[in-house]
Length: 247
Image (cartoon, rainbow, N blue to C red; front, side, top):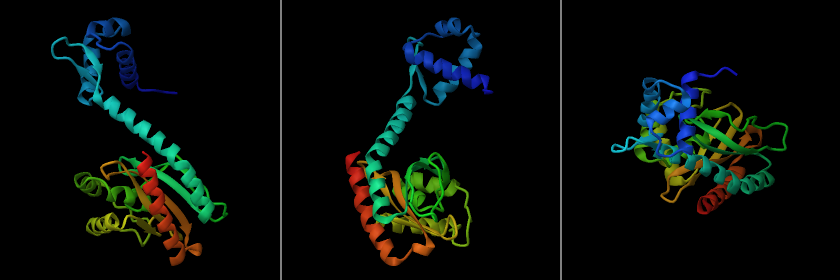
């Protein structure tokens, strides 16, 4: 596989620092057989992004707080998957519809787990793929419970995806809907992502009531009605709250 040399070097430098805390520039230069000027550019970039620290007195390098932050996010995702798995299975058993667990991934929602409906007519998706935030119930459930500054930034910078005639393209309408979602505790995608497909979602929140993930049920329009929606909403609200309490 073809790789990018500068990124390869940055990764190797980080691995070296992780195993040899309080490293000196000269030590790394000798170890990698790189010119100090080349290595300094790599270190400066890593430091700029918070991935390493440089002590102002000793000039030695250590891993930065960003590494802890990224590791914690990875750990949280694993923890959420483990805790949520039995609930995903239960939801499929109760409703026979596809259930997803998703997290925020830049300006998209990333599916980190799913349980498929036994029906031949069902939503098709794969774990590890993404969908737009603004046209999915799971994306809107996550967005609604983000801090206001982050929510407004994402809505402002996200591309409006008019995937169907039901997609909401106006940012002002979307912000109004997110405000309603925050009050009600659940979100809907009524054929906004794909014609003939509906979805309901509730957020999974941390200890300060901010969303870190969301769980959703997708159902084709042919099987969708108000009674089923009410039952799904009731169970999703209970389940997402239980998962949040266990994190």
